[in-house]
Image (cartoon, rainbow, N blue to C red; front, side, top):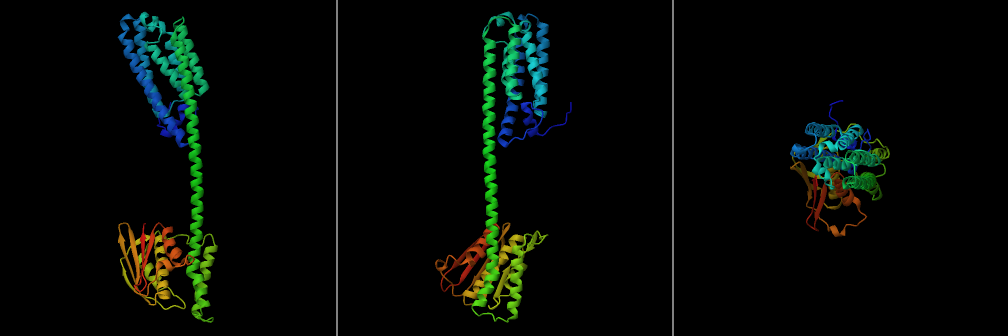
Length: 401
């Protein structure tokens, strides 16, 4: 028999004696592990207590030699049972052998227990202890029907070993029925718990999928807002001439954005794991804004490497904040500051323009709510805007949240 150690979850799954690992959920696996420990503890403790009781009554035993041999066999078997069960689980063969050992002891009951103990009707001898533990354990390491069969076998062996009407066989039968019923109820409860956990996991997976779809949709909307809608706004207001070279370049860039959104694999195949934030922020500030003056940005940025998606979100949010400055603040001057905070970063965009009242921002305006706040939330960060009429505005970006 192989001594190679089996994984714990496999060993516990084999408590039931099915010979192979079933597809069990976490509740069932946990129940089986606990049952395995209980079985081993009961077998080892009953073997030790039975040995002590047998040796205490050795002087008055009908056959002391048989008692010594039986006690030695019980201790050896109990130790082997515990080691094998903990290493490989209680296999069907091990469970049947345990029942057979107990049945043999019951058949030899009259030779192993003193007459005064045999005359007692409550089943107080050391054989009674071993028989009771085996009857309790059998439904846990055999199938329920086999466990009941083991109870019948042990009860018959007990009756043959000590003939006559006694209470002990009745107690053994009741113990077997109670143990089997308890096992069936516990197994059903574990399966119900596994079904509930599986249903919850499916619901969570579906919710995550829906959230990812919503986040992807919002990202598409942000990109459209920052590119196509901005270009159309400039054209509609007459800020860009219809033959403008800048308009041609901007329209080409917008088409590339739309193409990337429409193509499932529009993202780079091999994104850089980390990216320099300072370079991305300077690039965001120098992004062409057709029809708008270029912002004059004062940088106070500490070089820092962050995950590529985070750097992209920060740079896009800063670009949108600077676009809002030159479009609405009545100034082109702004400050961009970035400094590491712990394992993350804080980025500020400040201006001393005309400012505004946040309460006056219409709900349908997506620039602040989606292109800045929503973009940061999507990568696990957050954004806060502070503004007052006549006192400029401040956009604070933090990652992680």
